[in-house]
Image (cartoon, rainbow, N blue to C red; front, top):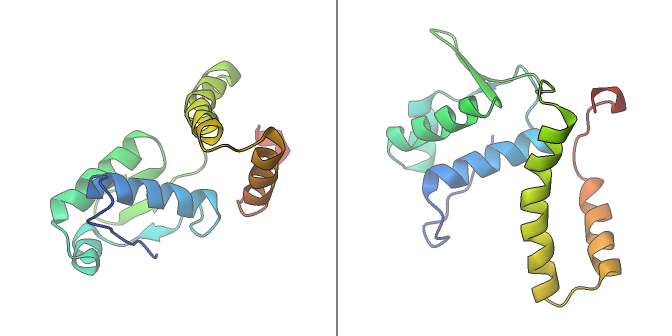
Length: 132
């Protein structure tokens, strides 16, 4: 599992870990059931306080992305589809609106945005259409 921390990023380190684990799962580089490094091991690799990694893992567990099995480790959880379609839409639309606002301010046209989205969609791991 490759995670890179940037001290000049401005984002708290635990948020960087959370975001990168989410990306690794979404891109298929981490699969459901795959074990993550123990807290101390990842903290040593990243040269950060173990409490920082623990906080990231706790946040990911709270969001349903990870599951902790006491005495056995931390694993990527099975995808959650227990939310209603409306709830899932709300969770997607809020960050999408922020992203589109940024694209407008950067001067992208709608066609350019669609091109970028199409390119990125091809790089992610999608569950079967029946899960949607």
